[in-house]
Length: 341
Figure 1 (cartoon, rainbow, N blue to C red):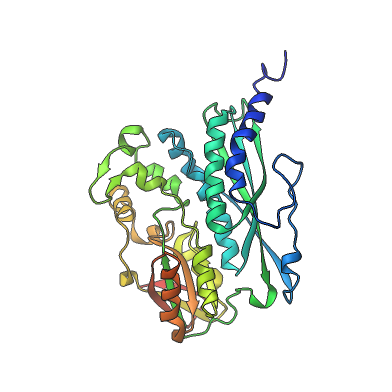
Figure 2 (cartoon, rainbow, N blue to C red; figure 1 turned 135 degrees about the vertical axis):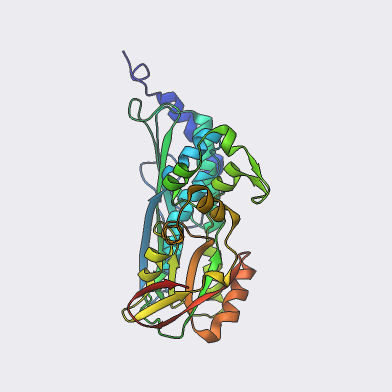
């Protein structure tokens, strides 16, 4: 008996690292001090020494049951973008610049080419957000995960000057809420999605005219990364008073997280066009409207609170970063929370 016969292929692990190196190298920043394959990743902080109060911000998350689609479709090169997005978008919400990222892949069997595909997506997410992929772990766990399945999670660290932290504390009645468009369902609500649609190759491979592509292609579209859009807003000299990443819990859970006491967010549902996939989910699954807005992003992945005088410049800055934005509501005096009208 040896380790390979027990289900763990050490040589496959070596091959995985070899195949992923070319993807990892695309993410490097000057501050990275170590090479892939070491016991830890080192990142120099000297570039931030001139900040008044350099402050680290962090985020960790996974892709969730969206991975089930990747298994069925045998498509593994975009879920890594989802993993990075879920972490770095939260950092950006605090006004932080993502610095580095680490991933964790646990699988039933290590197929080096598949692991490399997953990491290529992680690397792409890091490139989009400007973070360096400085480390990770691939754990082969036979008997714990099915042979052709895996889980993917990650952890990111960023930096922000403490006086520039986005806390929401200065949001006041009369501020305007700007929504930045999502790319679709992103990485939340897939337990409900999988209950509504049959998860098989035929269903996912069916083309829908209203979607302009197959159902599977629509659902697996990677989560938008908003780091560059928020940086463009800040670089335009605009103060982002509050920021909410619309993830699990939709509007009802996430918008209030950026609000101070005594402020109510009013969001107009007719202020933008809800993407067809959400209409399909609601009609096919007979999901009532409140549940839709309490589960999904409904086409808005990020909500910013800004002064009314900064609205036009905010939207222009977001557009310059290649994203779409529009005014979706305002803040008023009232009990802390959100109403959709």
